[in-house]
Structure formats: C-alpha cells, structure tokens
Image 1 (cartoon, helix red, strand yellow):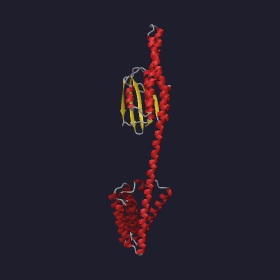
Image 2 (tube, one colour; image 1 turned 90 degrees about the horizontal axis):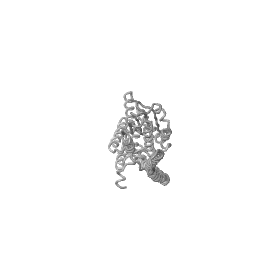
Image 3 (cartoon, rainbow, N blue to C red; image 1 turned 45 degrees about the horizontal axis):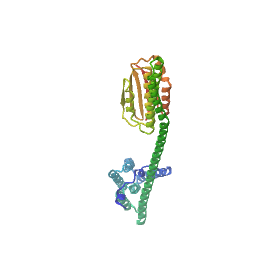
Image 4 (cartoon, one colour; image 1 turned 120 degrees about the vertical axis):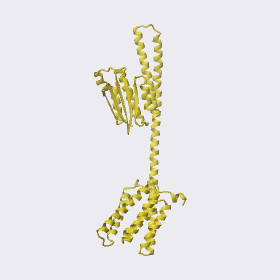
Length: 387
C-alpha cells in the first residue's frame, strides 16, 4: 500500500448515509438496535444491582450511545484527534463495564470499536485502534484461543469489507454527481446554442429590416425637408420623424434582446440608469447585487420601459423614481412618478393597458407578480420575480 492509502480518510460520501438503499439502511439500524439491546441486557443482568447501580448503568449506556454518535459526526468531518479521543472513551467505558462485572457490554463495545475504526478512520489510525480493541477482547475472552483467533480475524475482515463497500458506494455517488453535472452542462450548452441560432435568425430578419427602414425613412425625411413649407408638408415630416424614432428604438431593443439571447446582457442597474437619463429622476439599488437569469433580467427591463412610457404619455415632466432591490431568491422593481399632471381617471385606467397587462402575464409566467395603480403622489408599478 502507498503512503496515501494509509493516511487518507474514506470519502465523505462513503462515511455519510447518502446513497444507501432502503434495505441497507434498515439492516444498519437493526444492527445498531440489536447492539443497544445487548448492551442494556448485559448491563442489567450481570448481577443484582440496587437503584443507585441501575441509575449509574443507565447513564453509562446513554453516555456510550452519545459518544458513539459524536464519533460518527467527527469522523464524517475528517477530524482525526477528536475521533481518536472518542474512541478511547468508548474503550475506557468497555474496561469500566468489565471491571463492574458487565462482560457483555464490554465485549460489544470492544468489538464495535474494532470494526468501526477500520470502517471510518485512516488505516494509520484504524489499525492501532483495532489492535488495542481486539487485544482487550482477547484478554477477557475465555472460549479458547482458536475461537478468539477466528473471532478477531472475522471482525477485522468485516471492518475492512465495510470500508471497501462504503468506498465503492462513495465512488458511485461521485460518478453520479459528475454525470449529472456533465448532463446539466450539456443541456445548458445546447440551450445556449439554440438561443444563439434564434438570435442569428432574428438578426438576419428583424434587425436588417429595421435598419433598411431607418435608411428609407431618413431618405424620406431629407426629401420632404426640401419641399416648400406648408401644413401638409409639416404633418408628413412629423410623421416620418416619429416613425424614424420608433424604428430606431425598435432596433435598439432588438439588439438588446439579441444580446440577452446570447448571454451578453449589460447589468440591469446600468440599463435602468441609462433608461432614465432623458427623464427627471433617479435610480436606487438596494441589496447585494448578483447576476440575474436572462428571463428575470428581460422582465425587469421591459417593465421599466413600459412604466416610463406610461409616465411620458400620461404625466410628462413628472419626476421618476426607480428602485431596484435584490431580495433573497427574488428581485423587486418599483417605478414611481410624482409631480406630474396625470388626471385621476388616467391614473385609474393606465394600468389596464395592453403593455402592463402583457408585463403582468410575463411576470406570472416566471412565478412573480406585478401591481400597478395610483400611489400617494402619482402612479406606482411594482414588480417581483424570482431570481
């Protein structure tokens, strides 16, 4: 065996109950219950004890049970010296039980320490601990040297087989975790490739179309401006300029959507600050900032855009307050306007437009909520989505 074999711990997966089948778990608990019954039976049938001795024996059994549980915890955490200290306490308890005349609990403790040490400790510590425990057992055993040798050899074999079985289970669990991670990475890569393909399709169709529209609208604007001034000419020019602005905004939003599909989205905070640059307002961010999922990020952006569009439409000149808050497991967006001249009836109905209705449906698809309605000074749009 190499040096690493002697000094390495069994893996955490091997020492934990994770991956155990139900029959194995039932067998393990049955063996523990049987050993506990043997300890109780051997303790209280070794002689005639008074109430004081019975109380001390009961406390001793409970103390050994707690020490064994603590040993399982410390060995699971790969803490060598606490584990060895607890093992020494169990052996000392076995020696005390033997001196008090309770031979069965002493044998159970010594044999249990021998098997458990081989199963859960590094071999460099397990072999000496097992040797001490089995030597103590052999010293008190009166069944003859052949029986003692066979019993100690069987206990060593059982402990080592349990160790190999636990390591095999741990290796299987690690391989299963690696396979799941590989499958998840493969699925994520496939999803990213599909989103990139969709982004290319959108770019080839929609982005090129909008770019061509912008060129034609700009040419139309230049041609109209060369015509003599008049009411009809001014109206047509106004419509062409508005259409050009809408096409430019649509192209910008299309590019943002394409970036989101490719996973190249700028932080939401930067987008919100850029969004309110043309408005009298401010953006505040609360909570610990973290990357958002593409769906949550797009929902926050679209709701903010729709809310600001409503402010420009119904309350021009109003101060806009945008608050983004990172909460445990979700993100909250609040867009509030104040100081505008929005009529009360518009306040009541503006939240029922198709824009916010679509945003509410988008939020609900993600498991979130969107509320829109009059506030103390203006109109408030509140969004919460898991992120």
